[in-house]
Amino acid sequence: MNAFVLPYAPSEQEGFIPERLERLTAVMQRQIDEKKAPGASMLIARHGKFVYRQCLGALRPGGPAMPDDAIFRIFSMTKPIVSVAAMMLAEEGRLTIIDPVSAYIPAFVDVKVGVPNGDRLDLAPPRRPITVQDLLRHTSGLTYGFTGASPVQKLTKAAGVRNPDRTTAENVEAIAALPLMHQPGDAWEYGVSTDVLGRIVEIVEGARLSDVLRARIFGPLGMTDTAFFTPEAKLARRADPFSFDFMTAAGIDPVNATSPPKYESAGGGLVSTLADYTRFTAMLSQGGALDGVRILSPQTIAFMASDHLDANANRNHYLLWPGHGFGLGFAVRTEPGRAPSPGSVGEYFWGGMMGTTFWISPRDSLFALLMVQSPEYREYFRVLLRNLVTAANA
Image 1 (cartoon, rainbow, N blue to C red):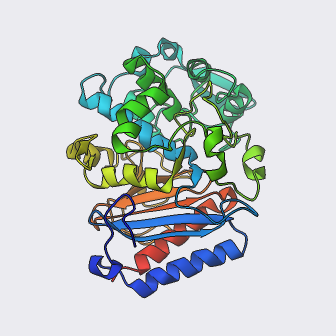
Image 2 (tube, one colour):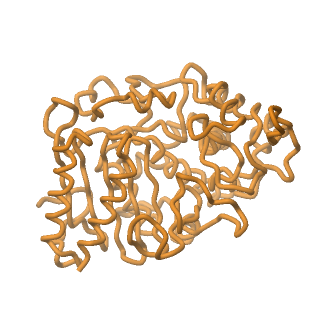
């Protein structure tokens, strides 16, 4: 097997049972045969070497075989990348995570908290300002319009704060005009926090987010296919699901842009490839550097991959697995049990709405990626992959 981003090592030399990795391939192929996804690409690495890589099935329904360089919509796997960009600015002393968001975006000075009161939504002042740390760990009180039916979520959905016809700055201004779902710091609430964070990155850098990511992360790491759109010349390589119905029912743009969009969603707008995201994940796994290029310090990576939720913060959210907390851009495993799959305390990970996912286990010196376009089965695929990779350890 030839090198693919990282040096290759036979799996048995790195503590895996080859027959059980073959089982991983067979089980994933069965999911494809059962029409849970047109195809999938997977990679497992340990000690800085990849030990397993498979591209299975088709690029799209009725399309060609899944290639190495397929382009996937990664949705919320955009969030860890933008979080890294923000922490690069923190390392340079250009922001601190305790900064109030309003120091960068004045519209957040007057933000209010929505308090349901019978049929009425009362507005209360926040007990403290939203900070950059709140954006990174999803404790800002900001939400998505498609993750529930609370009064604030309904308002968020009606406001269309991820409108592709508005600029990033205009969408963030619209976000600031909405009430918060919780007091800052009180609860882990998945939402548009990272979109606001991306706008702060733009303000500090004085450039569009795409230009910042390309100059600071994509270029240095050689992530040549990761962008907020798929150019016409690359469309033949873009993976598609069986249907976009799940996405459109939730009111989510399936990200079909073929030219630079007005709105560059820091929370979910990127497309990428297995090779590109392997480079990004390898950088994290190796303490912030890859091939002699340092993005962040090892201490900053460890800080990001630690649980940042307060002990009394409400973690009861269907998108945050039991036994986990949240760091600065990633979910973090805090307990060996309670989670839906085996693993090691200290693992950190995230995924995207189309089913893409990655996780890193510092204790096991291991990381793995799954690139797939199957929104209906996204959680199923993530748990299945974890179970099968864990079972392949010798």
